[in-house]
Image (cartoon, rainbow, N blue to C red):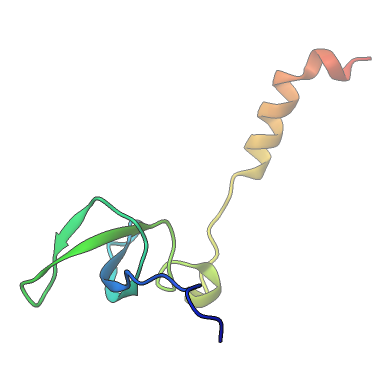
Length: 85
């Protein structure tokens, strides 16, 4: 393994899924300015996640409904003048 290519600032960090408030403690060197009080009473840096294994459709088995028809209609209405040509 090559020397001096890995960061030295690994520390305990709380990762929090902002969609369902699920949080877990792990090691990371991710930069963050937020902190949070963890269950053990200690304060750790907080990394906010958009999605985790508790909210991803692959792991949950629940697909989210996306209003694609509404998006297509909005696009057609917005660019109708260009489509007439």
